[in-house]
Amino acid sequence: MPRLSNQEIKRLAFGAVVIYERKQSRQAEIVERRRDGYDILSQGNGDERHIEVKGSISVGSARIGLEPSELNHMQKDARFYLYIVRNVGVDPSVHVFRRNDLLQHFKKIDYQYVFCFNRADFGE
Image (cartoon, rainbow, N blue to C red; front, side, top):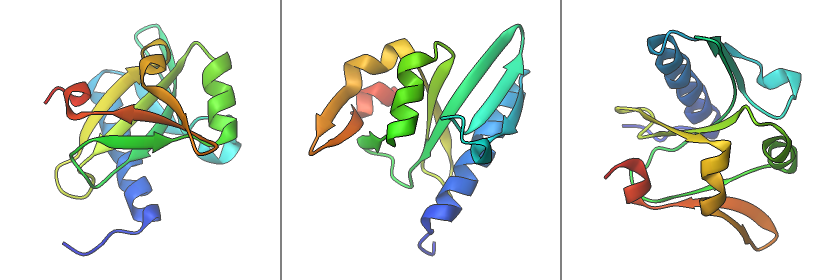
């Protein structure tokens, strides 16, 4: 498989999340360009989710970085979710993390804030 650019990974990850949300009977809208601090607004079943999407071509452990605006939004918004899409481009798998569940993974590394996940966090 040819190497994917960051933009291609992002596009494929967004697509996987939209499909995932539809399967959960929610309507997902990509709102990344609005700069609200999240990528996808999902609504349905009496639920509203503000989803930050991170994609990866790997299936192993992951370090997921957040931009300052994303971090700020996560800290303030109870409807914030982080969706990690692994194995983008081959057989994507969507992993959903609620805001409150993210704190156990949160670390500051070299002036950057990241979430550190191991394979067990993805059910492996």
